[in-house]
Length: 422
Image 1 (cartoon, rainbow, N blue to C red):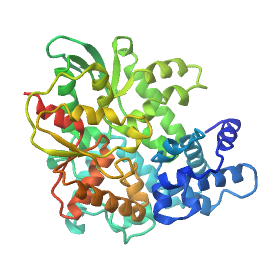
Image 2: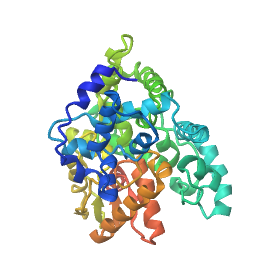
Image 3: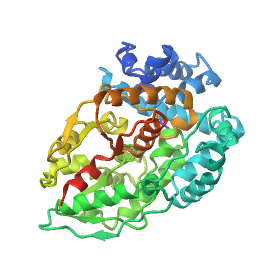
Image 4: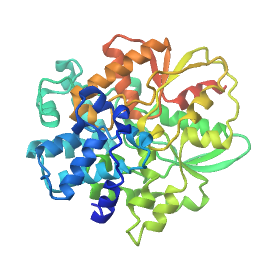
């Protein structure tokens, strides 16, 4: 995957100061050095220096990392931890270091999540199993993915309760004076589980004077594959997405994303394809236009919402939005412009909820502990509505609230904005 000199240069930037330890959710839970960013970096560096082998213990240390990037925010040395993590995960997959059944299950899970048609079929099939298993994943699937048939793995529920693909119109005109032309990523999981959120995103952009282009050929952004170690597959999907937007790119003022994990990766396309002579310039031009929807609306200047929403709202920072993209204030500032809405801060707002791509499936015990901590903090706010900017967080937090019989509503910030426009 990587240039070994580049990897080694990044590894030696870690001065082992320990600032990352308290920021790391898995270290907080386990207290184990090998479950911390510093420890994982030391393991990878020791492997590169031929001091230790890349063995099962190292695979476990890498697998238990959430990839939340809180360590990058905390690091005073600017260590590029995400590069180190993704390189290590690519090594695991390239060297086929997993049991065959687990490797097969992980690949199939990624394939399903990144192809809306397969996701719809799988959710419908899983619904049949769910009637027998209380809405949980069947034991044999749990065994292959997490190593234990006894863990409780939830089946996600689409908005509206019905699994189907929600495609966006290829062109949605601006309402009122046109201020910008933007593209939008409809996404994979978003198109199936969060069709209402996608539609709300387009409406809010229209009401803020944006013509919205949603290329019908645009598919997966490659984020899930990149973060899980399937590097070549990720780059293939990245090139395909760039090609889908290419005819529209010159006229676009921005490419809008409402999924934090997708947006974080899309902003890195220029770096990921820097050694690809055919795509590097196109990738850099693409990345330069990528904006999270809250980031973009904040920069554009929000058309003031006029319909009061009498609700107490708290905001959970999705990891790849806060730590990956440094987008923190903008969602809060937008929410505060809604009449009647009271925004209350959440303790540990930027601590991972445990979803982290497919982490809640492959590492359910650690994910569940993080979810319980997040739900306890959410309950303490007294909020009736929870806003967050990533599909994984939306689904996982909703699952945690339901399990503890909490009735808070969980939404994307853009859905609240949509409701506040008459």
